[in-house]
Amino acid sequence: MMALDIAGLTVTIGGKEILRGVDLRLEPGRVHGLAGESGSGKTMTGLAVLGLLPHGARTSGTIRLGERDLLTLPPKELNRVRGGEVAMVFQDPATSLHPMLTIGKQLTEHMRHHLGLGKAEARAQAVELLTKVRIPGAEEAYRRFPHQFSGGMRQRIAIAIALACSPKVLIADEPTTALDVTVQAGVLRLLRGLCDELGLAVLLVTHDLGVMSAVADEVSVMKDGLVVESGPRGRVLREPAHAYTRSLLESLPEAEAR
Ligand SMILES: Nc1ncnc2c1ncn2[C@@H]1O[C@H](COP(=O)(O)OP(=O)(O)OP(=O)(O)O)[C@@H](O)[C@H]1O
Image 1 (cartoon, rainbow, N blue to C red):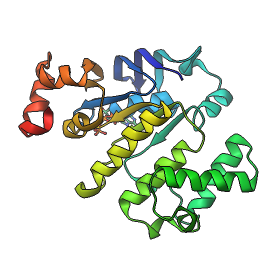
Image 2: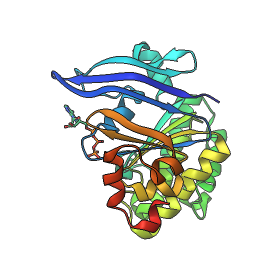
Image 3: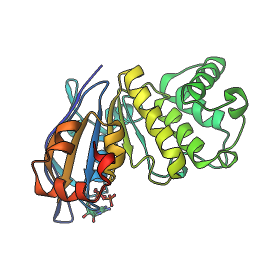
Image 4: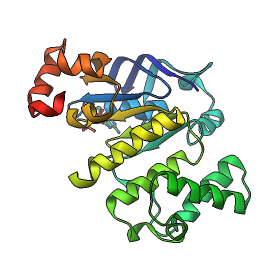
């Protein structure tokens, strides 16, 4: 299992400094929550890890995964890391699910392409993954299309696809923001369980400190392209050192933040 270490990460787009020296460390088996107001650079940090920054973005600093620096990896190797060792779940499951392909097709294409599995083997693993993310009737779900599932189930399927290549790092960008409140907790619990079970290093991007307090081990808070506060969840949420974190906390109901 591998840690992911972001150090001094800067991102400049069109002369504008979007990230100004971000330090962040993701540990295996830990959920690292990344909070901060809209535009603070949370999504850009996740995209930088995946090598998916907008065209023309300039970067400095390092993003270490084991011995490698993802920022200086040749495109071909970065491609192997992305969707292999590092996977991503987006806010809207529609971003990762193809509407015209069955769930089974989407899961197995991934595995056959990246892992070189045979048809039967890929199918067996796909059904197993659907079971792992608690899709009821996995065998049947395998043959269905995305629109035949609810939003919460679609996000679980997107998570299964992200897991198809046995990643070590999972970037989850607002994974429950688009979901009904009633199903949010279930998806968060699933992420938490997968993190523990598979030893995944998870970056959970959210503007919602309530979500954070429910699942994160460590919490970092961003503001204007910088991490202004970082530490164990209990410490950051109970005794925030930074005025900005305190103001974020004040927007939360008392009981939720503990
Ligand atoms: N394609 C782009 N080109 C140039 N600047 C961009 C682009 N996308 C985003 N930005 C800028 O980058 C900054 C950081 O945006 P980012 O999406 O990382 O913030 P965020 O913290 O994820 O916000 P949100 O919670 O709204 O998603 C913002 O100032 C935004 O305007």
